[in-house]
Length: 148
Image (cartoon, rainbow, N blue to C red; front, side, top):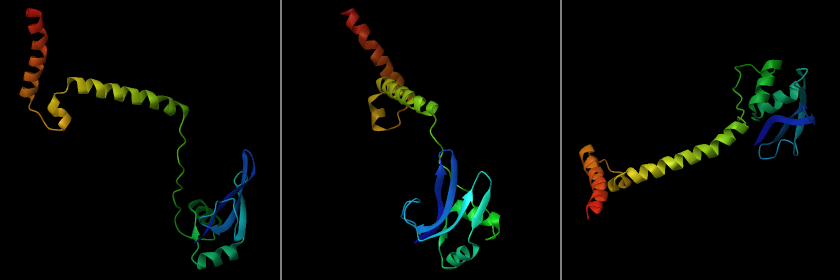
């Protein structure tokens, strides 16, 4: 299936994009069927081949969200803008906190296991009275040893 999407070109920290017609399984910088225009995000200028874009849209080609929004802005298409999904980058703070969070969860689980009655490991609900009785038995055992 063919798709119209951006292919990043240009220098580091100075991107420019070519609007390409490609097979959707090929990487954006890979081989293409046709170049349909270019876009400079710094000057907000776009040079598009409107006739070819309309032809390919008529043939049933899919359009990426950013390319679709650019075509709306340039007046080639009509409709509402699509929301562009940009994945959030992991910050250094989030990465630093993640191992610490894992340790606290592990510690909490260990302490919960030590105080939990045996039946709790079976994921059954235990009446409060039974838990109190089991706690008293645990406390009573060290006292019996001292008495002997």
